[in-house]
Each structure stands twice: as C-alpha cells, then as structure tokens.
Image 1 (cartoon, rainbow, N blue to C red):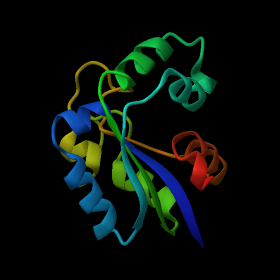
Image 2 (image 1 turned 90 degrees about the vertical axis):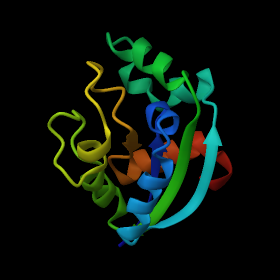
Image 3 (image 1 turned 120 degrees about the vertical axis):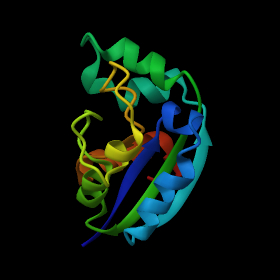
Length: 140
C-alpha cells in the first residue's frame, strides 16, 4: 500500500553536506520525493514534533540540537515507505547501525546517539500524518 512519511535530515547531516546522499538513497530505493524544504525549525514545530518526550532528560538537549542549524524536511511516498525508510536509516545508535544504512555509513558516535544520527523518519502512519502536519501544514 502506498503511504507517506516525514523524513528530516537533521542539522548534523545538513552541516556535513550529506543531504544529497540521503536523498539519493531514498530515490534509489524507489520512493518518491513529494515535498522538500530547507527549514530553520521553530520552537513551536519542535515542541509539537517531540511532545511525547517533554519532561524527559534528553528533551531539551534534543530540541537545542534540532535548533542548532537548518534541517531538510521531506515528504516521501511509496509502497511501505514508512518501514522501508526506517530500515534504510538503520538503528538509532550509529555505532550499532548496519553498514549500508544511512546511520551505519554516515552517522558518527558523538556521545549523543539519540540526537546526532543524521535523519528522522516517522514510525507509523499516524505519526507520519501528525508530523507532516507540523512541518508541511498545507500538505496534511
């Protein structure tokens, strides 16, 4: 079934010039890039995006990291794109991510594994629609 997902290339990926590599991997996998925008995240966007983590010890450092530079926000679509991109991204911890995945090949272990891992991808249809509404309100 064709579905949509939100993908974010995080500030570390943008700063290191990895956006093209990430987007090429998505396209080579057969997914379509429907929307793409370079965004300077607002406090409101980040509060909405990470609302389920508010109050946790990593919340504020994560928000601060995501505000540290621009991100590239993408709506991608295709058969099984949500699960497919998460497999393509690799596990959250860059030191454990398999070779061939975005994180396994490109992310570094800076001691901030949850934050500096190059990309974010929605984890469910419901999350994808909610997150797309935050980053692309006109496309929700």
